[in-house]
Length: 325
Image (cartoon, rainbow, N blue to C red; front, side, top):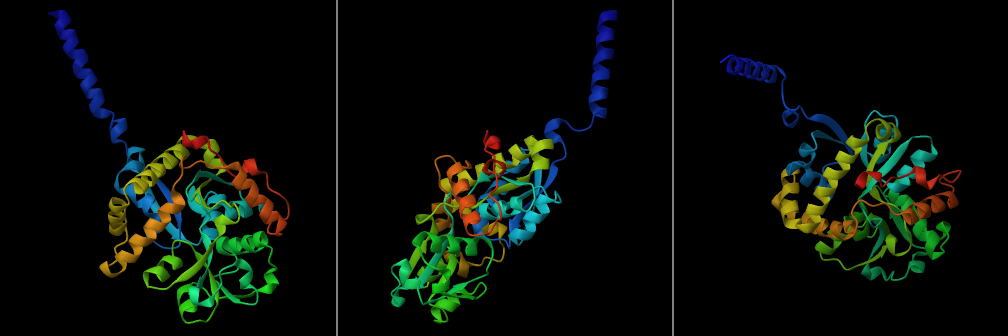
């Protein structure tokens, strides 16, 4: 009887301690993480929306807040550790690192660099050299679009001065259809899709057919990698699950994106579904997330050649594949 009594006392004590210990590991409060994303909510961020809605970040114990803004500003925030994660292009990582910002690319997203040069077919611009003497519109004279344009000219052997380059903001479709420019530098899964859906015949020079440059991926900073590598691994793992699901089932993914972008009405849904289909052709890869050293070396060499960075940057400092496992 005494033994039975002692067992009951011990059991009661264990239960009492469990009741006082708070939540179990599986019930722990999620860790809040901000991921800086480019510009505004858009169907082009569908893998992120999928990962969020399907609970892949929650499964990692994370509660994600999305922060939209311009790419260069977001990288500054990550580089100074005011934010820990961002989506940004490889060329911006090279620029940031060359300026002393300790940012690092930890998961590839876009396997192809999504910049292109578009003209209406009626202009007859079927070969790159036919751009000589033409007016070409560019949204801005910095960032991935402009760097892509310079890389394109270098690869086809054209002098930038042979083209009349005009800054037109993000009005490429109107500028082309209203014949204010002969060609325009575009985001490959945006303006060309809009033009085709509107019934225009177009000619398109895709940059990735001429050169290798690193495009968008998940960025963090050296401090986060050093102090909290498991956090980096968790963010990458959750995101890549969303990317894989998007590629595997675009229809389901699109419906998730629609719920994440309430301003997308039925009238624009058809176009945005076409945009997503085009996006997937830029995301597909045998090894999702994996960085390719050749593409990074090509990016650094080109940017140094063009004077965009004063000295070559150590390629190994720009990226890591360590968080894919």
